[in-house]
Image (tube, rainbow over all chains, first blue to last red):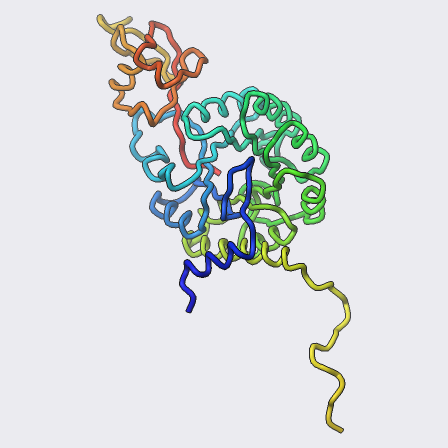
Length: 270
Length: 72
C-alpha cells in the first residue's frame, strides 16, 4: 500500500503548483479558520485538508479575554501562509483600512479583499471592491479579490492589478455548491491571473465539480467548520479537490445521450 | 473625572483610564498584550512595531488594538 508521502509525490507529478504572484503552493485547497467549535478541531481539520494557505480575519482585541481568541496562539505562521481578509467591511475605505492593519502584522502583502454589499445575501459590492482593489494594488498589496461570478467585474479586477480573482460558487456559508458553472468556466477562460472559487462549497462533490471547471483553486470555510466531523470532511475535501483537478487536466470524455457499449460488439458467439 | 496619575483614552471603542506618560509599549505591557500579537492604530495611524517604545499615549487619544482571529 502506498504511504501518504508516495501519494503526495504522485499528486505533484500529475499536477503543477498553484502559483500566486510567484509564490508556489502544492495544495489547491485554501481554507478559512472561522466558526470551528474548538481551536483543536480547526487545526486538525486544516492539517487534514492539506491546506497551506489559510484565511484569517482582523478584529479588535477583546481586552477582557485575549488568550484564546488570537488565532496565532493556535496556527503557526511558519506552518501556514496566513491570508488576511477584509471580511465584514461594507465600504472600500474600511476594506483598505483593514488590509493595512493586516499588513502591519508583518507576515505578507497578500490580502483577501472582500467588500460586502448586501447583508442578507452577503453578495459583494463589486464597485467598492474594484475601488479598493485599485487603491490596494497601487499601494503594493497582492490583492486576491472576492467577487461575484460576473465576467466583466472579474476582467476589471484583473486590470486593477489583482493577483487572483475569486468568484463565488454561491453565497458565503450557503453550502449550495456552484450555481453557475458556465460563468465560472468563462471567467477562467478569459483571465490570465489565477481564478479561485471562494464561498458556497458545501460538500465534497461541490469541491470536485468546482475544480472540474478548470479553476486554479477553491477556498472554503463553513463546509469544514460546520460539518459534524470537520476532520473527516477535510480529508474528503482534500481528495475531492485533487480528484476534480486531475479530472479537468485529464480531459473528460464527451457526454452523449445515447449508450455506447464498452465491450466489442464483434466476436460474439452464435 | 480623571483619577490622579491617570488619563482617559478611547481604547477599542470604549473609554478607559490608563497611566499617564505611557508609551504604546507601556500600554501594551499594562494590558498584558504581547507586541508581536497585536497591531496598533493610534488616532487612525497604523504604527510600526519598531516605534512602540517611542510613541507616546496622550490624553484623549483614540487607540485600536487589533489582531488576527478565525475567519473565512
